[in-house]
Image (cartoon, rainbow, N blue to C red):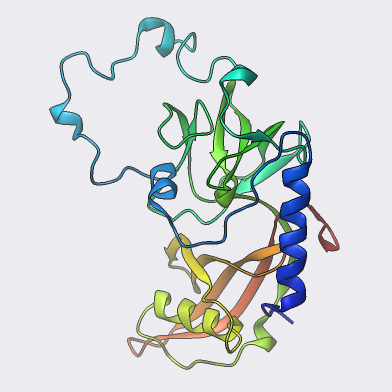
Length: 271
């Protein structure tokens, strides 16, 4: 049954796992569970403080011929170890792949030259991007955020683990969710489904619409639900199917849930 298991035991296990990571190598940050911070906002799409492209100085931000052809520029070579902020985390293996999670459908995840939200951008990953290769290097910063080094189309850069995960087992959870009745929008229906996963007294879950409404024989929406107090399962990606009640709202038909795993995944579930 798809439920959050927010218990003192789970919280203690998470704390122990984070302490262990801080003691391996130089130490690395665990995936932060707090609400979005200003630094995290810098890691996904542009914020309102960024200069409008039309207001840049002449020549500012323009690529050289070498950069346009893939030579030079951020990400063409891995950053020197001595230039990396934070401490080493020895929990990730070169060649493993992860998926983008928790990024809104109208946003992107920036990959940066260094594990720093102010570092130059190397590239950007769309929501639902899958099979992003790890180099094996990871750093934990002073704010406890963990950043992973990625190999993306011959470019190397860093992204916050908050937006990266292993996707695990897929289950049909329709029978475990009460029918919320017709809802005015698919977003309202998704929120009603997520509320079913919320246990009394547990911290609020973080819901992100990763894929906007798709119309067809059934109407669908994809949301990432994160914030479980568990050191293995960080959340679920919910693929929600509904019928359009002829203008009377959207009624739930089925829900598929994919585990969002912190440490790795197999066909049997999160590690």
